Length: 67
Image 1: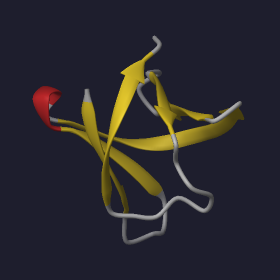
Image 2: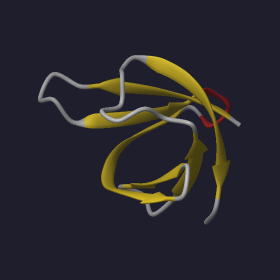
Image 3: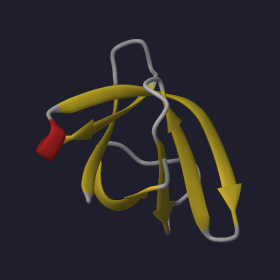
C-alpha cells in the first residue's frame, strides 16, 4: 500500500494511509537490514524498504503491513 510520511507541527513523524483515511503517529522506529519497521500509535507495524536516514518528509512510499 502507498503511505505518506510527514512531520506534524510538533516535529513528530506521522503516517497517512489514504485508502483507510487513517493518520497515525509513529511511536517506534526500528531497522532490519535495508528495511525500516514503523510502529504506529494504533498498533500497526509497517515495513518500508529503502528509506534514507534521517527520513525526509513529506514523501510517499510503498509499505507492507506486518500486523
